[in-house]
Image (cartoon, rainbow, N blue to C red; front, side, top):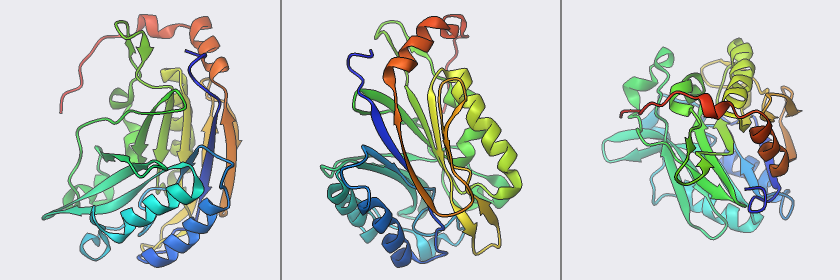
Length: 269
């Protein structure tokens, strides 16, 4: 595995997302991404980075043939890196909180947030997805998720496929709008997901105050497979790039093969 996986440069773009202002957010996050040209393999943006986490979906939703996706495609090409983050997306008469995995060649994958945050009535205005996404980059298998998904360990369980001789993933990513009132849960759950899944884990949150007067303290982080922080961000707009080491991950999985005692189960839609 280590022979096929290359060191992965991943950049955490922690911004103060402008409320219901797609143009301002394109300018802000676009400038941050372009500043990393040639320096990173993967750029991670927060959840709903063009609008903020809004229940006013009709006026803030993008479409799959709209400006937001075109901009993201152009930005990935210009920066020479894969970019991920989520958008409010409209499909017919429904809206989804859709993570886009945009590659520099213009191809992309997508994942619709499965767990909808009912405490903010997200489940009343958005439709949920039911298929977990796994993508590959530099030999890494990566599972990108959205915010509230972080609280559901069964959905996120990293299983070992004995036939294919591989884990479901090597890196978990969470893009989020996680308010500072629950920052202890955010930090603790990121650590737990890394430890229990024998995987690197990255969480990218926003900062600032949104249109619902909710405060966000950032706390974006990259953690190793022991839950130890490789980098932790503060409460301001900040961009940090960290390199993930595949050899260290492989060595840990061999030294501590907890996956061999894992329970078998099937996740239903």
